[in-house]
Amino acid sequence: MMRVDVRGVSVTIDDNDILGDAHLSVEPGSVTGLVGPNGSGKSTLLRCVYRALRPVAGTVHIGAEDVWRGTARQAGRRTAVVTQDHDLDNDFSVLETVAMGRLPHKGLLERDTGTDREIIHTALSRVDMNWAANRVFARLSGGERQRVLVARALAQQSPVLLLDEPTNHLDVGAQLDLLDLVRELELTTIAALHDLDHATAYCDRLVLLHNGRVLTTGTPEQVLTADRVADVFGVRSAIVTHPLTGRPHFVTAPANDPLSRGVDQQQP
Ligand SMILES: Nc1ncnc2c1ncn2[C@@H]1O[C@H](COP(=O)(O)OP(=O)(O)OP(=O)(O)O)[C@@H](O)[C@H]1O
Image (cartoon, rainbow, N blue to C red):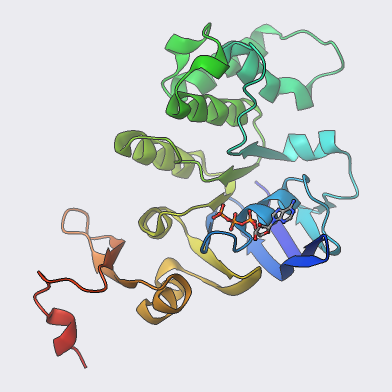
C-alpha cells in the first residue's frame, strides 16, 4: 500500500491558471473523492497524479517516489487509471484491452504468461465482463466499456487507483457495484466524482475544488456543509441518515419546492 502526496501543484495552460497550489494527501488504502463544479480542476489534478500533465510548480509523490523523476513505465507500475477518454479508433478485443494492463510489468514483446491470463480473466470476472472477452471493445456499450477499463486497471495490480468519473454511463446497479468493488480493493484511491451522494457514501475524505483551487479537505460531513454546497454549487442540500443503513447520505432539494413541508423554514 502506498500513500499519495500532492504538494503545491499548479498548472498553467496558455497563460490560464487552471490549478493553483493544490495540496492533497491520501493515506494508504483509503478512498479520496475529488468534488467540485464543472471546470473546477478535478481532471487536471488527477492528470498530474497519473503523469499525463506536468505541473508548472509543486511535486507529486507516490510512496517515496516523485512521479516526475521516474519513467512513465515506473509510474504505470504504481498507478492504474480509468478515464473518460475511450480510444475507439481500433478493433482491439476486450481481452487485448485488459491485457494492456499487464504491459508495465513486462519486457518489450514479452508474451502473456499463464499467470497474466489468469489475472486478466479474474479482473474481467470482477466486473462481470468475462462473457465479452472476445468482443471488440469499441463496439460495446458505454457502460460495458467503462467496466472493461476498470478490469484493465485491476489487471495492472498497482497500489494506487485513479478514477475520473468512474460511474459515468453505468446504470444505477452497476454504479453501486463498481463503488463497492473500489472499496473492497483497499487500494489507495482518488476518484473524481460528480455524484455528491456517492462521494459521501463511499469516500473516507473529500477534496472540494472550486475555480482551480482546493477550497477544503476533510470527511464528507466536514466538506459538504449546506452553506458550502450552496456557495459552490448553488443548490440546497443536507446530509441525512439513510433509513435502511443508518449511514450518511447527501440529498439536494429544489430551490422552490411547492410540495415542501416547510421543515427547513422552521429551523433557526
Ligand atoms: N488543455 C487545456 N487547454 C486549455 N484549458 C484547459 C485544458 N485542460 C483543461 N482546461 C481548462 O481547465 C479547467 C479545469 O478543467 P478540468 O477538466 O480539470 O475540470 P473538471 O473539474 O474535471 O471539470 P468537469 O467536471 O467538467 O469534468 C477548465 O476550465 C478547462 O476548460
